[in-house]
Length: 143
Image (cartoon, rainbow, N blue to C red):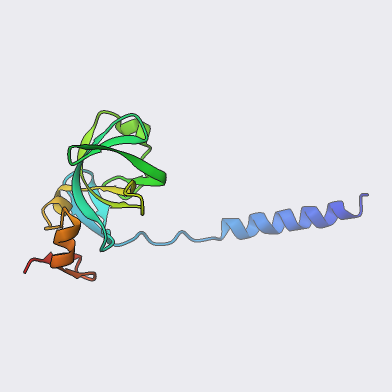
């Protein structure tokens, strides 16, 4: 029926008008980085560990010299905190912070910038249990 056509046209035009007046939110707080000029300040979870990764054919990786797999729904964050597709990284190596799922598979990976690599971070669960974590400053203190 043609009775709905004017109503749909009016709704579409009002949607266009409001879309043109939208503002873009301000970018997140940034810090300078040696790689791309600017990168986002990231907060890593307390259960994240530091490691050396070699990317194989997904989902296979080598973490700290041990061949393992990435878990279902894994995510890889680049130094700019944008998601990176694992196929782009095949054969590459990086220093990363990572979390694992309950079965020990790597679930989330953050490829670190040079500034993030310089921060002290535990590499094993035993170190994480013995050290003290400050979530606001994102620093670990060794006993």
